[in-house]
Image 1 (cartoon, protein in one colour):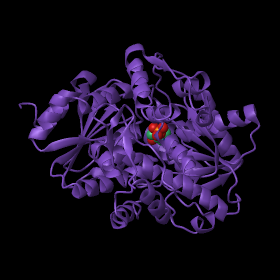
Image 2: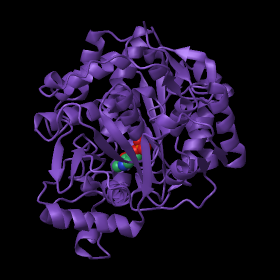
Image 3: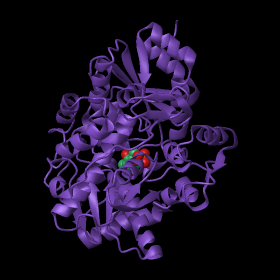
Image 4: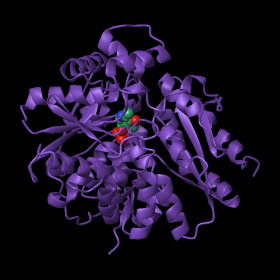
Amino acid sequence: MTLVYQSTRDTNNRVTASQAILQGLATDGGLFTPLTYPKVALDFDRLKDMSYQEVARLILGAFLDDFTAEELDYCITNAYDSKFDDERIAPLVKLDGQYNLELFHGPTIAFKDMALSILPYLMTTAAKKHGLENKIVILTATSGDTGKAAMAGFADVPGTEIIVFYPKDGVSKVQELQMTTQTGDNTHVVAIEGNFDDAQTKVKEMFNDEVLRAKLGNKKMQFSSANSMNIGRLVPQIVYYVYAYAQLVKDGELVAGETLNFTVPTGNFGNILAAFYAKQIGLPVGKLICASNENNVLTDFFKTRVYDKKRAFKVTSSPSMDILVSSNLERLIFHLLGNDAEKTAALMAALGVDGQYEIEPVDEDLFDWFAAEYATEDETAQAIKRIYELSSYIEDPHTAVASSVYQKYVAATKDPTKTVIASTASPYKFPIVAVEAVTGETGLGDFEALEKLQTLSGVALPPAVDGLETAPVRHKTVVAACDMQAEVERYLGVDTL
Ligand SMILES: *Cc1c(COP(=O)(O)O)cnc(C)c1O
C-alpha cells in the first residue's frame, strides 16, 4: 500500500509522496502530511554498521514509497557525495555532557544542506515519473540559510528556476554574500524591505493565487517549494536522527533501546518535526526539546497551548530562528488534533484573522513528547563561552541556543537521559558572534572575525566562506515586500500576460 500524504486543511486533498514533493504546498494552503507511518525495522545491530547513505535508503524507501529503489538510489548517491566535507555526512561529536550532531558539513555549512542537497533530485525524478513538461519554479523565502542551500542544490538544474527572497537587514553578512554571489543562470536573489515572516507570508500567497498559477501555466511553468513546508525537505531530515542513534550504539555510548533526547534549535519547526517522525517510526526518543531564541512564540505555545504571534519581531544573533509564524507547527497541530483537517484549517484561519489560536483538547501523549524553553541573547553568548571553556569547541549561535536551553531543561527536570544537540550551522557562518562570545572583543569586521575564529577553534576555514570577500556580487535587486509578486512576474516574463 502506498503511503497517503494529505493536506492539513482538506481531507479530500490526498496525494502520494512524489506528487507531494512536486507540488510543494497544497493549493488549499495546507501542508501535505503523512496520515500513517511506515513500518521500519530499526535493528541497531545492523544499523550501527550502516553508512549514512544506507540509512537514507532505509528511511526514504519507507516514507517515499512511490519512488523505486533505483530512483532513490540515484538521488541518494548524487546528494550525499563529496560535496560534504566529511564522509560520515553527519558526524557526531562528544562534548562535556552532550553530543553534538554536526549537520553543517554540506556545501553551505548549515543543516539545510542535509535535505536541500537531495530535494532537486527528488523533484526532477518525480517530474519525470509523472511525465511533467512544465518548468518547475522554486519560490523560496529564507531566514538566511535555506536560500543559499536551495540555490546550491538547484543552480543550473535543467527544467528549474529558483527565486529566493531574504530580509535585507535580517541575515548575517556571510549569509548575505553567500546568496548575492550565487552563480547559475536559473538563480534569482531578491532582498526585501521587511522581515522573514513578511517574505514567507507573501510567498504562501503567491502559491495560492489562482490567477498567477494560470499565468505560469500558460507559459508551461509551475511553482514548487524548497521550504521545509515541502515534505521532500522533511523526510531526508529523519535520516540523521536514526543515524545519530545508531552511531551512539556503535560507539558504546548507548545500549540499543535506551532512551535518547534531542534538543533542536527551532524556527520553522521542520527539523524538530523530523525528529518527531523518527520517534513515530520507533526510534527510542524520550523528549523532543524545542529550543527558541528571544522570538519565543513556540516556548509559550508549549507552555500555554496558545499560539500568539502578536508580539514584536526581534532580530537576534541566531537569524535563521527569527520567526513568529512557524509553518511546520501546522503539521504537529494536525497530528495533535487526531489528523483533523477541518479543525486545523479553523485554527490556521484564526491565526490569520486574530493573530492567535488555542488548541484544546489535544492528544496528551503526543503533546507530552515535547519540552520547550528559550535562550536570551546573553544566555546564547554565555553558552558559546561555556562550551568553549569546557570542551575547546566553538558552537554557532543557533546551536548555542539549543545548548543553553538544554542546560535549563536539565536544571528544571533533573532528567538524566543522554541528549543529542542538533548542531545546525558552522560557527564560520556567524563569525562575529562566535568570536565576541569567546573573547569578549567587540567591533570586529566579518572577515577579521573569520581569521580569529580559525585561530581560536583550530578548524580549517570551510570552502563555503573561503574567497567570499572577493567574489563578484551578482544579485542586487531590493524590493518592498508588497512588490515581491511583481518582481516574480517580471523575472519569469509573465507580467504582460
Ligand atoms: C533553518 C535553521 C534553523 C531552524 O530550523 P527549522 O527547521 O526551521 O526549525 C536552525 N538553525 C539554523 C542554522 C538554520 O539554518
